[in-house]
Length: 175
Ligand code: HEM
Ligand code: HEM
Image 1 (cartoon, protein in one colour):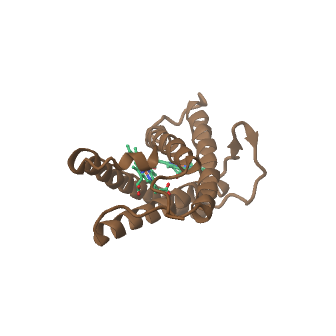
Image 2: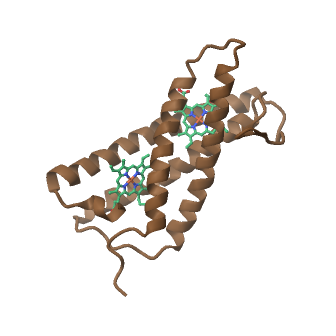
């Protein structure tokens, strides 16, 4: 059987669901770190929302990676080998960062002094607070999310290039 020319429905659903959640999560993360550290609970509340959405994204990327491995192969684009390789590498790095971002956030929080809640439910403490590990993981989290932002920008520029310059209707593959 010839490979499909568009992504299957489940891949499309995961792509758009995660794109929306990731962009909201990146915006929330950048905004919440500047909230004042007072006793109002506002900062802690938004941090808890961020941690819950982040852990949900962490679970979704595991499903997505598993599905990307299992799903039937999709036909390559009619692009030069160089462009095909660039697109494939950008997708691989996006997958990697979509994994490292939630993992570093989660592990950093495991070593912090605050309990982790998943949409209200308090998770059991996995390790004693450890400032040094928390700080290292915060730096990893920061680098992962900034690299993710950069690669998403490259991905969006590629989309704009296909849509408005090449006019090759690439978006149909992800619809
Ligand atoms: C957070 C933002 C996004 C991430 C992390 C992301 C990630 C990915 C990844 C990993 C793929 C490879 C296919 C797969 O395995 O699912 C892909 C494909 C694709 N994405 Fe995105 N995406 C994002 C947002 C967008 C947006 C906003 C658009 C367009 C407006 C878009 C358009 C496409 C298209 C057209 C493809 C198919 C490319 C092909 O046929 O090879 N993506 N995306
Ligand atoms: C795909 C998932 C995630 C994305 C895109 C993301 C994004 C971000 C961004 C943009 C920041 C602000 C960085 C800064 O300016 O310092 C941030 C900070 C933070 N994130 Fe995430 N995050 C994700 C998952 C998580 C998870 C799962 C947790 C914890 C369970 C978490 C915990 C934190 C914490 C505690 C901060 C404050 C800075 C620090 O202590 O490291 N994040 N995140």
